Amino acid sequence: MTLGVGEVYTMAATILPGTATDKSLTWTTSNSSVAVVSDGKITAKSTGTATITVKTAACNITVKKAPTKVTLPTATLTLGLGETYVFKPELPYGCASEVNTYQSSNNSVIRGTKGEQFAEFKALKVGTANITVKTYNGKTATCKVIVQKAPTWVALNKTSLTMKVGDRATLTARVAKGTAYNKNVFRADDSTVIQMISNTGSGVFKAIKPGVTNVTVTLYNGKQASCQVTVTE
Image (tube, rainbow, N blue to C red; front, top):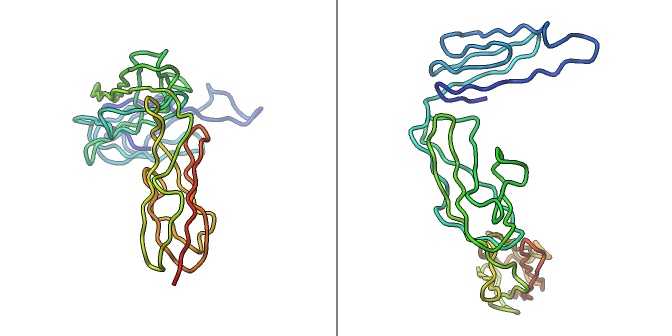
């Protein structure tokens, strides 16, 4: 586990039935200048490492600097109705925050599928909302989320394609106006004929050997489109 200086984390210990009780557990730290512990509540004191032990179970703790800021990969995000997205905050190098909290400005539009403390959110209604992530020491970042209707169909820029061995090609997907998606996945039916180089966003692939195969794009809601690829010498 990695904590930031000043961060507090409560660790739970699992006890075998009939062998002990919570009151009989003894918590210790190998380096009280780095981290202290009381009844499972760990407080990071300074940068360094320490081992927190309860009975015969132990957890190695690395304490890094407190975050000076937090950022999200994008400031604006467009999702389709029913689509899920995992927000992954980024911290400056050498900093840590084990526990981050997330909040939606409009839970009717997008909300955490497992509760406010989780990073995975689901688009529930067409509209806009802000998702805010907050580190243990109060640093925040916000992403504006635009939720549009779910795609009713998807099409590729090509329905058939002929390539020579060694060539590369790119397929892109489009959906009906007013609908949206954030993630799609490209897949080749026969990976010995073409090799997928990128299977998210645009489908980029390379011709490997002569043959015929299909490249299929699949959206989050199951809508699909295919392109038949013929590879020649």
